[in-house]
Image 1 (cartoon, rainbow, N blue to C red):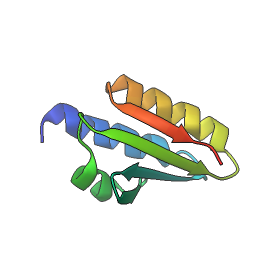
Image 2: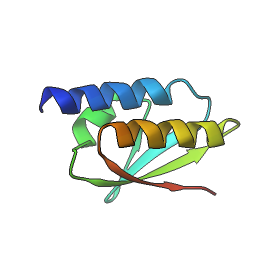
Image 3: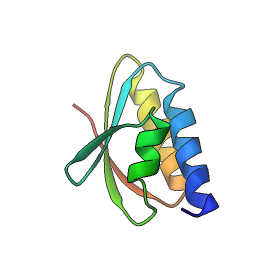
Image 4: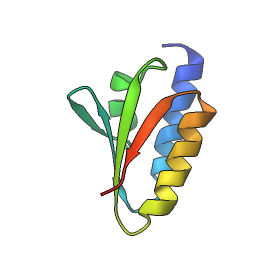
Amino acid sequence: MPNSSNQAVVDISQTANQFQSSIVLQYDNKYIDVKSILGLFTTLTASGKYTLHVHGPDAKEAEQAMADVFAKHNMAIDIVTE
C-alpha cells in the first residue's frame, strides 16, 4: 500500500477517535469500525466508494470531520444520517 494511503488510514482513524459517536464504514458487504486502524488497513483503497454510518451524541460534528478528512485524501464518501 502506498504511503499516501497509509497516511489516509492514520488520519481517518485519528479523526474518528476524537468523537464519542460510533462511526462505521460500509464498503460492499463489509462493515468496519473506523476507529480500528487495522480494519481500515485491510479495507481502505483510494478508488473505493464508501458509506459512513455515524451514531452518537456528537454525530453532527463527527460527520463533518469525517467528510473533511476523506475529502483531504480525495476519497468519495456518502454519510448516512439516521
